[in-house]
Length: 181
Image (cartoon, rainbow, N blue to C red; front, side, top):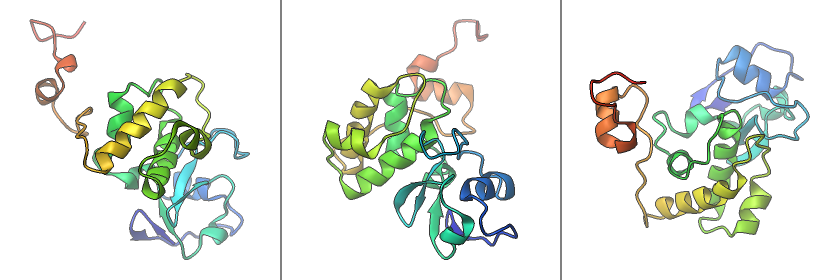
């Protein structure tokens, strides 16, 4: 199979859930284990562009297919879905966020202007923190960004210094004296 645009071969039992191959063998830990029964969506990945729960698909079923994990959605967190989730404050603890971002990206690829009902149907992920009201606006905002109607710069990319982040995101400015409280 191809994972995040790289060919991969797993030396594991064919009935191993894709989730465990990704996490344990490929060290792609952004895909989370939540329930193991397909109910929560924390393990969502794209398989040939379709959002699927990786706990329910085996590596033999994924053979020859293209898999995209949250790490492959964008290496620098610049995907509009990721930016919109931050901008709309639709992230709390972050555990469910990768699965939500994957489901939202799949939806927006097929439907760049989804209604609230379409978003709720396509992003069935469970979030114990309850970010649901903000998810709809975040996904609609990401759709506008993908269509070129809006630009989102909510989160600095990984590896950005505190000083550079403070210039880019005013809310991240350090208090006078430079030390954080």
